[in-house]
Length: 252
Image (tube, rainbow, N blue to C red; front, side):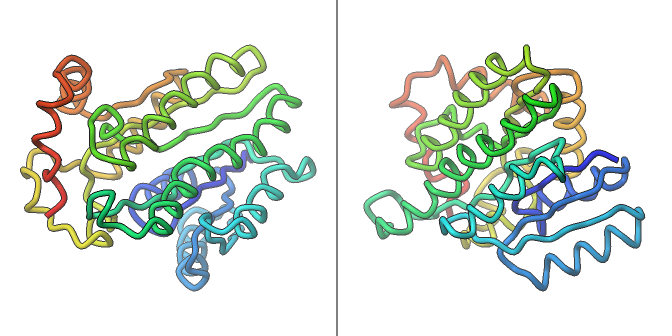
């Protein structure tokens, strides 16, 4: 059986990845900060799908926690066939209203963890000549929305480069760019779903199904739904000062 490692696997998009990968028969390595919640998800997936589920309680804003996951990905005796870099969080306030340590922690989770975990995974994958990485980015990467958008723009660039660099060695890399999604993400930011129009909210299960299909098809970017494809296209041609007028969307 193939094995997939999913970060941020206890809720939202990460939990949907875990469910859908288990349903197709993948064994799992689940990573999140909350050990009790990890164990509950592991028990749920094992009972429902009969797959093996390993849990790693780790905070990816902490280098020791990150190192634990890196070591698991680099283990040649227990190969990971698919890495899903999903863990992340956002900040409600604007840059100067946030403590710089909190901004740094977000950067560590959104950028440093993606870099280090992908580096750890790619070694064994390229040696075997097979494997895959899905990096969860955001349509916000095309918008001027502070350090979150800047971090996700890095994820896009890194994923596109890695897809071209390692495709000849049998490794697929995909960046998933969701928009507003019905998960705990915005609740943790203390942001109401009414802060964005209802038609913009996506279903996590549907976007994960799209992402997995796009990854299997070898697509570098997966943008779920026609409306977000249109938004992504427009965002690349509309002048930045105009886009900045909408910074409060999804933050109230």
